[in-house]
Length: 461
Ligand SMILES: Cc1cc2nc3c(=O)[nH]c(=O)nc-3n(C[C@H](O)[C@H](O)[C@H](O)COP(=O)(O)OP(=O)(O)OC[C@H]3O[C@@H](n4cnc5c(N)ncnc54)[C@H](O)[C@@H]3O)c2cc1C
Ligand SMILES: *[C@@H]1O[C@H](CO)[C@@H](O)[C@H](O)[C@H]1NC(C)=O
Image (cartoon, rainbow, N blue to C red; front, side, top):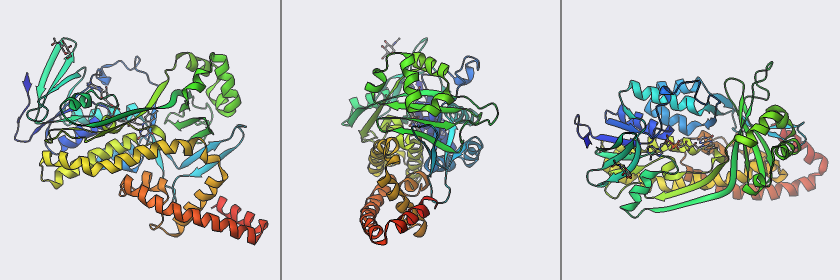
């Protein structure tokens, strides 16, 4: 057994999972002077021949919470990240004829969320870790935790046999199917639930345009909402878009051949059908995997004596419809580090304080993520929703800082915890509903002409 305890007088930390969240956590601890060891079952990405790596980008949206957490850990790194993002200032809603697109801005003042290449971000974090002297062990698959709350050990399976390490503190950032969490659960009373939602996703690809570079506006998150199912697309730096098709399982399963699939696209997403291309759709139907989506919640996140903790998707996997999964995982890291600071470096105390402090916020964002599916897939085309949203945003611009639309609070206001955003929204929503009823009344009194004028004014706010 390898013991890494007390190499210097700072405690040793073992982290499982070199995904986005595990890497940021490793960087955060190493910047504070801890002896950090990071493990992942994957091979070292930099050892894989680039020609054999899947070079097609898969992107995700990074917003203020995620950026603030990176900035907290390393300001220069957050600037590096921002050099390679594509800002998205709103949604672009594509109608079923394929001829009309409507922009719906996200923020009151042009705030943006940002599209970033997932593997670029992961590689950047790994490079930073290598430079910081963090020991990163690839092809180490966690199989067992021991003595979790006294002197924690972690056993890993490698190609040439198993190896065990001991650390002062251990952190599980090994994703939704976390084995760390599973092992932790054996020794404690951790509540746990896992719920699959009836939804699959398939990744598609829109190539760069030979003339315009971007075939559609790069600075929007494109949505083709069709109630039961939807398509989205986010731009990549090279001019391509990563597109994702979401549908209930019965929809995709009722499509039995690639020609039915292309016909389905032609009917429902005619402009996307042209952008992706018939051949690529055929190939996607035959070859691309269909992902499932689930929600995981666990509580508490820490072991009873504060030696072990889970963060990121391992603790709270959410559906991707608010674009907050990684952002929230990054925020986990910031909150944890701030608690360690507040407890003067006492990690036990910080781990114990983390769970009760974080629970309501994690529950809130998981629920919002689920609710947002309905907003994206159908409400964005509903007139009541649009009027309410215009009102919401109008009030937001009149009463700066005293009236904040929910999307603004979640995506752009990292100073407002998720659960507080939900409480504020509930209050505002009651007011809005009353206003809306009142407004309909006044419109009737004012007459249709005035009303139409008023609506036009909002529309082009
Ligand atoms: C379709 C889709 C779109 C999304 N879009 C967004 C978005 O726009 N914005 C956003 O913020 N979030 C988004 N998310 C969520 C985001 O991808 C996750 O929240 C994020 O990747 C979680 O990071 P993580 O490091 O916790 O886990 P992961 O990224 O899953 O990393 C876990 C790591 O642990 C390793 N591991 C697993 N088991 C073991 C083991 N036994 N031993 C050793 N290592 C192990 C894995 O190899 C992996 O490297 C999206 C998710 C999906 C599915
Ligand atoms: C390695 O760990 C796995 C999982 O616990 C176990 O099945 C296997 O027997 C171990 N191998 C050795 C050589 O100990």
